[in-house]
Image 1 (cartoon, rainbow, N blue to C red):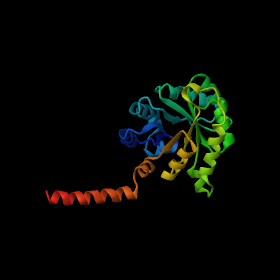
Image 2 (tube, rainbow, N blue to C red):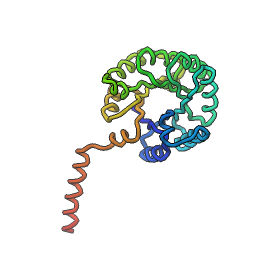
Image 3 (cartoon, rainbow, N blue to C red):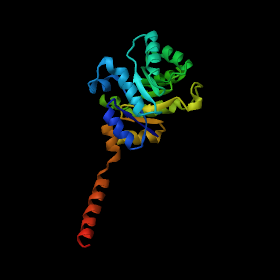
Image 4 (cartoon, rainbow, N blue to C red):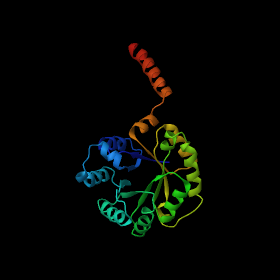
Length: 227
């Protein structure tokens, strides 16, 4: 399974890139707002993320509300860098936009997917990536992982033709909160997990690893003291 980082924070992206584990970046308006970014600087910020992550897909989201506006935004965003992926929310306006963009070779990440029918429609319209959410289901007392499994099974039953040469559409597990979300997504066969940096750190750490390191350090101190 591939790891994307779900952030617009350049420092987080640079650090995660240094680990050698990233295959892409996803952003959204909320994540950009958390950086303190301004509207006038949005495209320059996305271009810088693309530069830092050269060759890796970087999702930049359109806030347009019409099909025409989404297509216009997508063309402009795609012109920023060859690794831009345009993020669109699943809705009646975004499906024809995605179909048009796919015909132009512009990759779309269809986001805010919460059901298998939504995911299937996104895939059929030509989305390169489909992003079902997990954590937001958990927030309302539902089982986000069960919902994800339904999406994965449904989408992978079929081939779609638009991105066969690239292996798409790929399923991005989104709204990831815990290492268990990552584990279960991998076991289900989801292609990608897009993970906030705090959750990515949790994936590295384990209490038994920390305990083991502490014991090794203590024993090595004894060896060093007797040198």
